[in-house]
Amino acid sequence: MIRIGCSGWNYRHWRGPFYPEKLVQKRWFAFYAEHFDTVEINNSFYRLPKPETVDAWRDQAPPGFCYAAKANRYLTQALKLKNGGEPMERMMASFRHFGAALLYSTS
Image: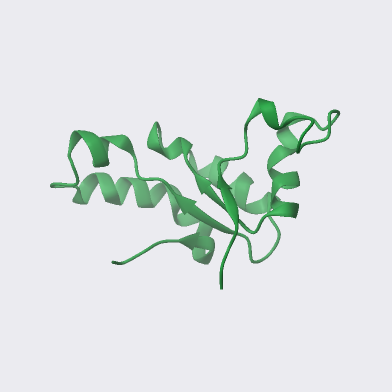
């Protein structure tokens, strides 16, 4: 299966071309999820989301919607992927609330 999505959804310049002008920003993700079946969570590169934030994203999306998490910069740039066991576990703990909707690669 091929999934189509974007790297995030919270872009002000999408108001008008994609998001309806009068749609409140807190509804942008739900609107996005009506048109795409996956999204990359790219803000995790800068900071890990709180579990309640992940819960809100999960609850706004329809069944079958999937998420790809961008690895945190501490893991990818500061550690250069070396000795990353604990930081990786911390990152994955943030995303466990997605359950089976989290896309990942083991290769």
